[in-house]
Length: 118
Length: 245
Image 1 (cartoon, rainbow over the protein chains, first blue to last red):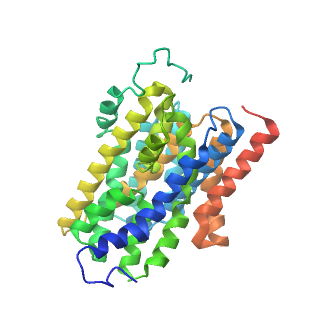
Image 2: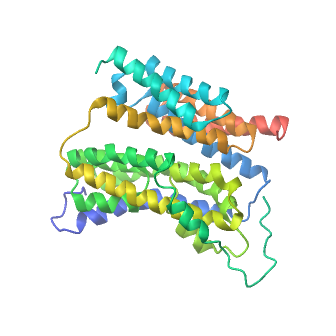
Image 3: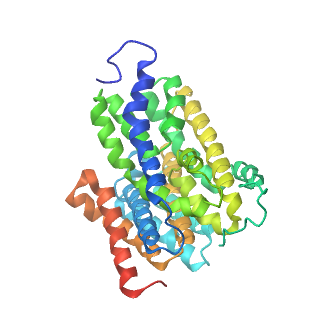
């Protein structure tokens, strides 16, 4: 069964719900049920926060190390270098997010115009 | 920090004045980051043959960009429902610890489970990161309203952005797209660092990032899960060994 299996107007919407909305949403509902009464200060909450942070960090890594689209036009060292530069500026300048993000973007822009051109 | 502020039984459970502040945070950096990500998605969906109506439906009901990307790639390849559902459920596993970490932040005396179940549908990386980073500055009773307001406003903006790009048949210059894409990792990394409460969370952030290329080498299809869970378990091990800091 694919999205083109039935020629009715509602089938694609049901398909989107079953193939994507429920497989995504179910983990959210399981999360609410699983947390139960675990609260601040529990060591299990530290584990949960570490895994959640690690997973988002891996998503960041995916964008830098295996990008799709325009970012892939730059070599790996330029992508990783711009990321590390922006983050280092952020850490150095008292964890100022705006300055860190701006610096990373400036590094990316310089790399782009040197390596790819306008 | 304390959520034991129910001295008055007649007091409302939530402080809904924070809902408005959540809504009004559109135009700030996090909403810019997410909206820009959906700009790229609108073009991708159009190229895969997704209609405007289907696009406007799928953005809010799924509300997780990695799941959207798998769905649209599956539609483009005419893949089966089961194959897409399996890939999506693996990629969405991250929602489980994210929701579990969020609940203690927003829960107050009087919070019902169905409130959390409803609000959990709005959890996706950007809104989650935003709440985790700001919750210390929001009184406990304002956190859920703030989160809901923020997530709903970025949801509306992202859907509009994706729909607009779907209709504008053109495409953006590659540099502009690279700039938009690069906002996401920079924003996630800096805001998660600021959101951390334990030093081992910052360790997990660094490890998850640098483990990803290694995980791609071992199991390219499961690289995010492998690197993310590996980094989380390693950091928790460090926490157990040396205690909280």
